[in-house]
Length: 106
Ligand code: SF4
Image 1 (cartoon, rainbow, N blue to C red):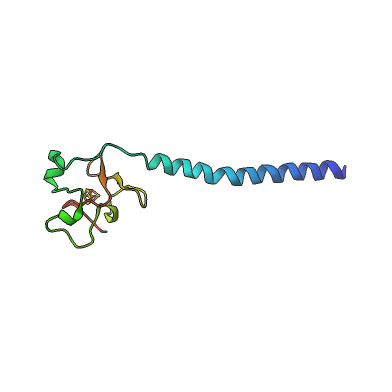
Image 2 (cartoon, rainbow, N blue to C red; image 1 turned 90 degrees about the vertical axis):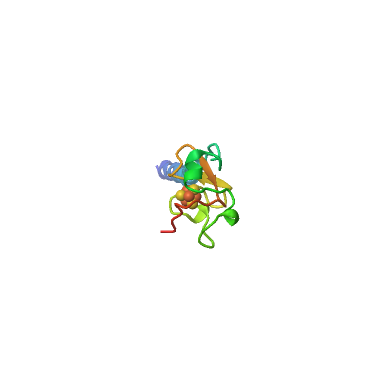
């Protein structure tokens, strides 16, 4: 009887350990899906031109120093990714180092 309890306990511990291992993997899968890239927004896109979007913030006229897409409140890119989504331009990615006049650091 002691062996069956010990065996059941061991099986439970193995299941818990497996679950603890798989949960972080599931979280990573979700992040990977979030980080999926979309076509890059072109500076020549009329919507981009309307917002004075540039792929390189150092070329931006009138930008707050240090303002980048990557630190804009509506940027959706992952940390360190070269590009990411922007709710202003659905279906397109913007460069992390880009900028437009709708930039908001809030
Ligand atoms: Fe970049 Fe923000 Fe402009 Fe979107 S709204 S293009 S993230 S600066």
